[in-house]
Amino acid sequence: MLAGELYDCGDEELLKQWHKAKNLIVKYNSMNSEDAGSKMQILDELLGGRGENLWITSPFYVDYGNNIYFGNNCEVNMNCTFLDDNKIIIGDNALIAPNVQIYTAFHPTNAKDRFGEPREDGSFEFCKTQTAPVTIGDNVWIGGGAIIMPGVKIGNNVVIGAGSVVTKDIPDNKIAFGVPCKVIRNNE
Image (cartoon, rainbow, N blue to C red):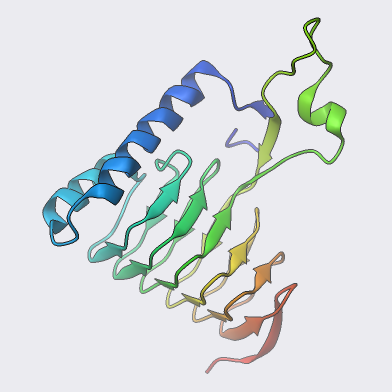
């Protein structure tokens, strides 16, 4: 999975990790907002790693959780979805607005490659998936409703405008927005 090769989402080991993450995130999302200590304990069990001063507003959604890494002083606002079938690495001082989606998973465009041959009973196996990591630098602000696609690298000191769909890398010190997201000007 982490190598970016086709893999089976129905693999027993992956499903075990997936269910663990789903159960932890249900606990996290249902906790009292003021219970920061318990929330951090869940994040320590869920995430691959985190720096100091992480704030994630509920609800928050993940696939596995253990492939997500945060730097210091990061804030994730409500209703964000991180499909971390590969690594999502977020640097220091990141602001992630509501409804942001970060995807590392994608599927083959050919249905036969996605599902294989039908079984005798007409059913299909789990959908085949591939992944590519997402890296977000330091001092990045991602506006509300933005979608970050698999394999994207966002540099340091970048602002991504609300509603953008980021399909390609964004270099350091830029302001970018749109569908697809494009660099609009320098951010100095």
